[in-house]
Length: 177
Image (tube, rainbow, N blue to C red; front, side, top):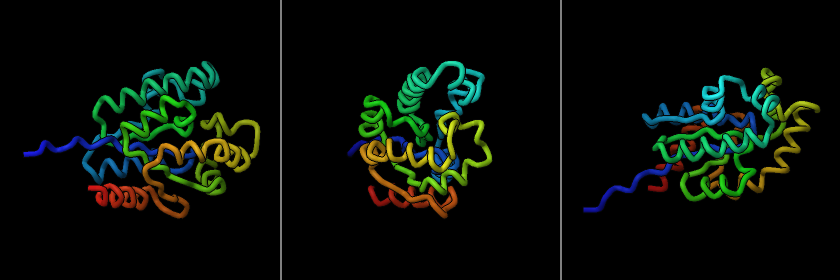
């Protein structure tokens, strides 16, 4: 009798405003599974918001902690992981996402992402110092090849709710069995 292969965690990557957090929650609910949101985990551990952590400790510190939390989430057996938008900036994190996770790129246009994050500009430190859509376009140009490198699947999220996106991810997972 064959031993059932353990399912890899589903890691959602993409630009801020792509819907990673809400899609992860919806997907975890649908799968009856656990979820880890790396930004929320870091905020809970440190007692400060992402914006406050960036201001106090800098992006390099933030990315190092993000690496630790991603490794912990993967090792913990959690089934769904919502990553931060910059998780792909480090080669070791990209390797972990490629090898240990079923990674899905939630692709969003800069215009849609700007619309989605418009209500929380102060909580988005990388949007400081420019028009949100322009900053998001620059971030996407910097990161799109990295998202593509780690992604086993891609879902376009413009015009879709997190539940609809989660359903598309579930369909993809089911097609791989």
